Length: 174
Image (cartoon, rainbow, N blue to C red):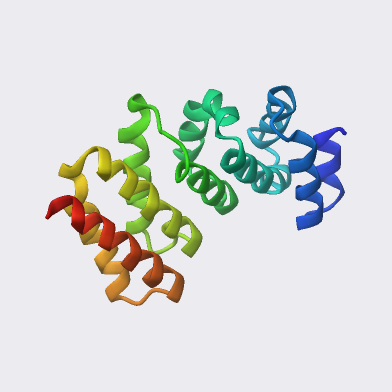
């Protein structure tokens, strides 16, 4: 399969699931997918973001070579699909120590922004909570931001995820 050509055919769940199945846990095929994802063709970035997110969740060892590139990418204010799927990955992996501060800043910024989609905010909450488990001194700041979202009743998804993460975060400071 030529991943680039396959993703050019259509943007559908069936199509990206075929890419996920094809790549599996093969590092060479994952590299091919990442070359499509890290390009500057918007439609291919969007179409490749779902498989990247899913494979990053299923096979986190494949994503480790790309941590710095993904954080750099997030700092360029990419399309929502990129933010959503990269933050989804970061929920499940150990973020390298040298990137934790940048990821923390990005995720907290997503929570504070009124423009970010619900999924990006929800995944960011979990990323932030996991970082707070490692650095409890950051917990109060994260709690405050999540409480704002929960109290504003932004969406049922945000309220549910927010309450769930707040319980875990409050245990860190008790």
